[in-house]
Length: 603
Image (cartoon, rainbow, N blue to C red; front, side, top):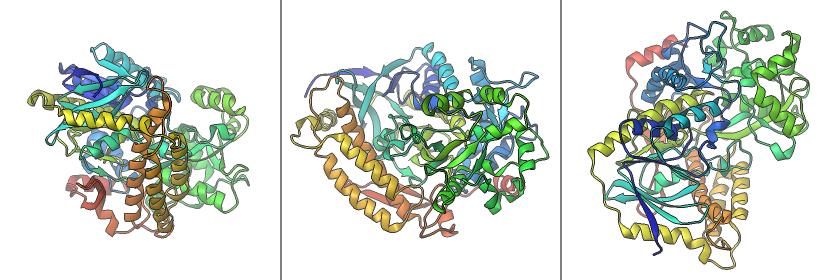
């Protein structure tokens, strides 16, 4: 066994996005010794790409908003498969977390009288998203990072965690390596917080950055934790379509929140054609009313472009499938049209959507103040993940916590835009707080040298193979297959075919060859990531096969309707002793009557 560096901490946080930073801040504030590990550089986490805003019922723009409305909106958007307790805590605590961020230095856009400005977003009844132009995630990361550094975090940048280490049932450490030189590291700890984000890189067309390879989900699964809701992969309705070099890059929902509209090739606003019954009472049935809503008219209903993401994405796909799409296989998102309604409209667009303006200008040579954007669905977010206790965020493995996108429960079958950033703040704080408490109440566990040796052997395996293919070829084949067979519209035959293909891809992945040595070897990193992607892809496929209905982001062509039977449970996956995936249906916990009453009142 080669040498490795050993570190000792009370709490180990894996992932340095919004959830990881907020967990680190909270744990450090209790006096715990905290280590923060990130695959990338500090400040470069995928959270910086979140644009639209942080959903919180501050009621700064519309005084009718409160946590009860936010709770009901979240539950309705998730098709009532959400953890009601997580949705309750999220709605109640999000305003305080935003105010806290402001106190730490975040510079939000302001109303004329100095309050935090909030914008409209899909599925939210009132303007609820606190924002910084369309660069909210960047401001959030900057603020949390600056605050956390002053608390004395030990930060390990450009490190990969290969496995979690256990003493009996409890997590007691992690083993990994630094990505620059390939030296191994052992972190001994009393508690671990997973905050590694989602799985978007399992798909060919995605808005997700390179880090999103399902690492936290795979680490938790192999450590014995249960995963839940893996069938629910969100396809954001508006990713860039053209040119091919930018396909999938996100176009923020904030464009529609500021008045942008969706049109097919004939110039018609097709979203008026299909308004779900649950949203009829809240949705405008004409252009004039929809426009007044975006301009703050409290008596107007929201335009259909601000329906939930799952519905908008399917409507776009319908237009394309029926021959009414744009030249490159999407539809048109038009914000330029508001110039006819607003004086100095071009400057207004640049002020409200500076990143979008520069993104299209620099990457596609398109001026969004003059012409529409071509957009289409892109893999964006994972509603499923590690099943956690709603209050503490601990998994069913003692000492292992999860927060943010890699934790399941809050969003149910479909996430509302803006709820992701408040999710990071609310449950990142809770995960850090409870992980620090767990560390105080439990002694340091023992690290088993055999586990460390097995992890090292596993990590070095790609160097020992000769004559195999490179890991990139297998990863590309996986992405193509998931996009084609387990994408936005699913069918049993195609998913069964996907399982056969996954078996072939796993065999290929086990034989991949990495050349050179461990220094600066991206092929090696990809070979490690590939195993995680294959694991989560199989879980997505199995869960999607099990859910024989269409609900939220999960749409089955062969089962296009919702089913009352499937409304009663979540699909939970665990690793069996033989290494295979065990799938079970677990009933939703009963909701208290007072929360049921809130939902009824808000319909």
